[in-house]
Image (cartoon, rainbow, N blue to C red; front, top):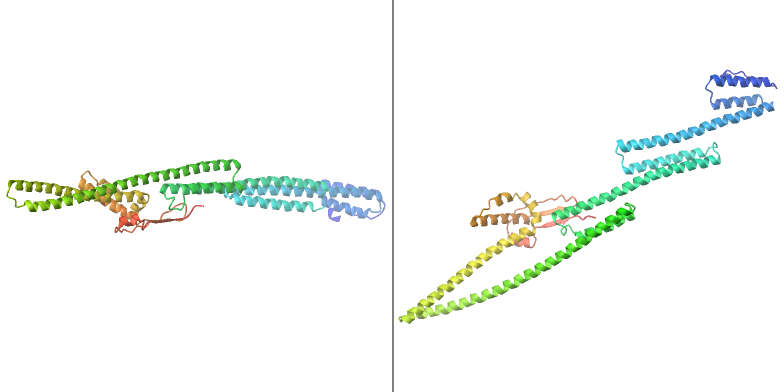
Length: 425
């Protein structure tokens, strides 16, 4: 006690000494910042000094208990302040990292989980001490679970946000895939179809809902939209099938008509050949005729021969013209069937389509030559296209090799037109 400037009293039954000691303590507390621990130490020393006086001991025991109560209260307050400070500083750090440093959703979830673990450890250490009564410990744990419920709610919201972001990413990827296939009209080459796309989408939406990535309302709405789109896609397939059947019937009618015309033409050719042979024979007979009747017959036969030869000449010319038209139509059909590859082919091959088209005029001979040149170059370009893609972004790599030999037959068999794609899942 000498360190406090207080006198040390000898033992002996003297309450005046105790009162004096108490007065000195009161004076010291009024003039110094005395902690509860120091006060407890002072009372413990007085307990030793006045242990012989039972009345004094009772009073000192009360003071010791009061000092301990102050110490316990201070420790409890310190624990509460530590918990409060940790919550505030942790929340502030997460907020700063989210707003200023772009902390990801997954990182926020991890931060709140660490916060909850640390807070739990602090509370567990608190209740292991002897400072708290059973009721106080119960209250502490109730406060902890209230706090935990709030943090769990934040984590739950962030997890829902993260899950929904996954769903939104899938929807965006799916829409990109569909737009690319629609733009390039290459569903078949990509190993896919609108019907299969929407069937996969419905299955995926179900999986996302079952996994907790989306709520009921969005699951129901998106499933309904995909189902309607699937119905339309199936109807488009049916319409396409009907159009192809209609086209097949039309082509078959034309084929039959062509076969009948060809047969009729063959008969006409045969008839002309027979007539020509007969007239030639008759001409030989009447060539040297001397009678007027014979001369007239010879002239008549000459007229018939001339008419047959002209019909034959016209027939041959029509065959030549038809062959030219068939060739042009075949070239057109090839370009039409492969026009979805034409843009990339033109860009890579250097074919100046604009220049060629602008040079077309109404002079038949010039137009024929120009169009023939245009189709020859575009067909050559189409034949040499080789496109590949490994992702829905469809970054096409086109390689062009000019080679005009056997273009028509090659394209009819789709030789040199190699298409390979990845698949969208």
